[in-house]
Length: 336
Image (cartoon, rainbow, N blue to C red; front, top):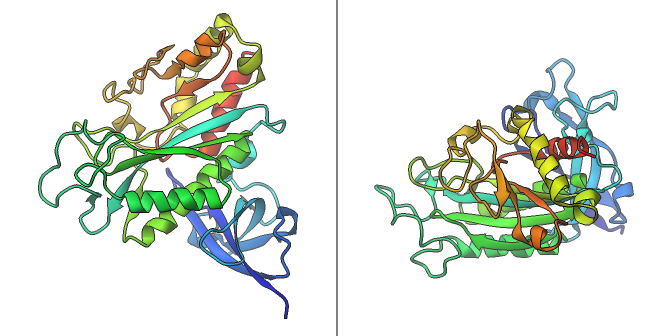
């Protein structure tokens, strides 16, 4: 009897302003485990805001494959959405990334809230009222301050088993808020890994009766929002940079505020207020070690002779890493 493998095809739907993850399972016999042996597939785009009912077939093209930590003989297959004629669908931001030589390295810091769908509040919030003010939750330990550790620890293990390059995790500033960091060489590769890590987070949280809230400001008031800080570098910044180069790159970002903000996530104006370690959404600043700036120049970059990375602190937690990376690459390349 031939061996059967479970391939979970994952794609992004066409909902605006924020796309959601979709997936379905395909059974393959005697599957090699290699990306090139993942067949093209299709889905009903009329159910995902990607096609009309009278012409609803959309294609999904496999672009990355990961072991599925939850299934025996299982794989997670990240895909791009194509039109029926094989051209990229308008919802396919991955196809817009200009980084075929993988010159860019990205590190995304994904913040999120573990969310209780029954109370419609972050895990750790009482049904009536509020927990103690933030300040004691960041990198905390103990049941009084850290909520949902079993869930996030299992997610970390799953990411590592799926061979996603997670660099670390930590409890964040607000109650029930957590972060994980994904680093990868190549913008498309980094985006693939962030989306599959998000998929695993959502699927894993189901086991605990929880959901993952990626809204940048789900709790109004004196609570931190959630971002997805984008750390990036290319060969120029890593090996040939100097203070003048870094200043020129930052100024190029200042000249393109609207283009970046337009793809950095919906409702980001609720988070980028100039408070809670943010710069106002309509302003731009940069500085060394400045976590209140739009772009932070890490002190390690300066100490390394102005060779290293930059951190764009504006992207929201619900931003599409493909769109964010495409914008960053375009602006950075304009300086070269």
